[in-house]
Image (cartoon, rainbow, N blue to C red; front, side, top):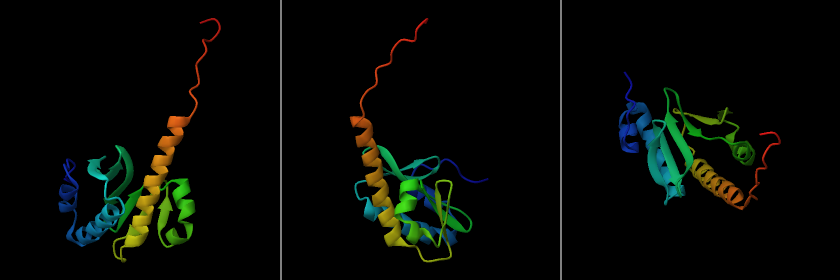
Length: 138
């Protein structure tokens, strides 16, 4: 039975097959280099990197690939040409385990996601508050 109670990213990586450990360690390093102030935690039983308490980017290992999440519309549009060789669908970017890790691309994706998350937070904070009016007859 697969382990599903990871307490740390080290714990998660230790559970992976030998063929994936080195690749996933490189993915982790690329994200950590791009987001040095990020908090590294486990959420949904996979590694996630949080900046100012907000989840920015997740990764997970699979039999033949590893994935990065989320692949937002803006991210996919910004990296359209660079993501062409990879499978991108339903908010997920999939990279083959058998190919070299595109560390620079992963770093740029992590940085993009951090900015995207911060901008969403700023927009939410500056959005006008809409007062709710009572509905007639209630």
